[in-house]
Image 1 (tube, helix red, strand yellow):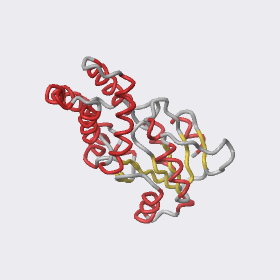
Image 2: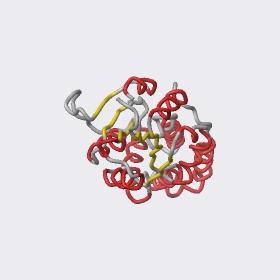
Image 3: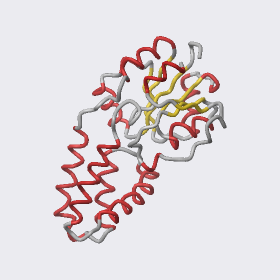
Length: 231
């Protein structure tokens, strides 16, 4: 594609690893709750249902995740053990927030290439301060013309972003790993979308995409580096 487009790029699990660290906390929590007679499968299923409900009201990020873990303990009948479990849970969340960011392969060089040809916007959802902290720690801030942190990434959020930035939707593309948050709502807003799959994508971010070649506005690349072949 020719230069001069506006590229909106997701952050978590597109630029750096994210969900694998949350999954590790869930695994250790499930192991800990087994000591209280709660099967690991039950822990995971219950937490998924709790997060599906709580993210609508409380948003995303480690703070809400930590609160969801405490709700989980109550849900599986461990109210009596919560005082014993709370230090463990809070230590896990504190360690999660200190985790060193691991950039995915070829991200800095690819961003540098894209910025030379296009307007590049980091478009991420979650807790504003937490997401900004990740951006700073990643060392990628200078690769973006703008950084936009929103509470939810739905079609309305994409339309609002286009208006704020003075972007025509037909000159905008969204790039990310989440069908639910990056690809489908961007298309609904009139953007093009490039799906960059990640094997560790959070289950709540999955959704069925149209079959290959069914929608010319949805492209798929297997690695971030291959965006250079598209843009």
